[in-house]
Image (cartoon, rainbow, N blue to C red; front, side):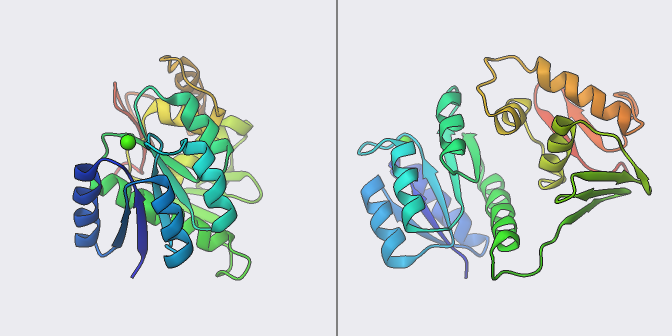
Length: 231
Ligand code: CA
């Protein structure tokens, strides 16, 4: 059974999440402080860690640095809205993904499974790399940075590729534009999603679709964007 370590000082959030993850077939270890979390990492070697950045005893990015010396397990950072600099710092310090509170058990479960898939793929002794992602008629070559649509290669910029790749690894999941910006540009978005909107519209043109007739990029105003082939 996959073991998830939850490092979160809010008892209610932590225990609710632990129960919900257990229902979904994951085993949850719980730590209410950073140092407890670190101890559990050493003693129990969890497969994945969900780390709350706002802990009472230790700064989140400092703890992440310590966790990184103790384990190769992927770390998903959980943070309150508005802490974009924290997110950026922790992504740069080696976090694998992040979620903004409040998040659902379903959302964190999907993230956990995605980071575990990615880390299995990247492990030196892991299964052969799954370097081709398929979404409908799209084929995304993650190593070669190439994308084909129905067999035709698309001429994407680096950012367009990164956006498509990010969405393809979370296929069917709504991703907020703020998240996309923070993850791809590695900077706080300062409340504006203009840059993301611009790149999405270029990407959309290259995918041969329009906002009114989406084929892969489904944008929900004020919520985010989801990659999924239209039925
Ligand atoms: Ca907290």
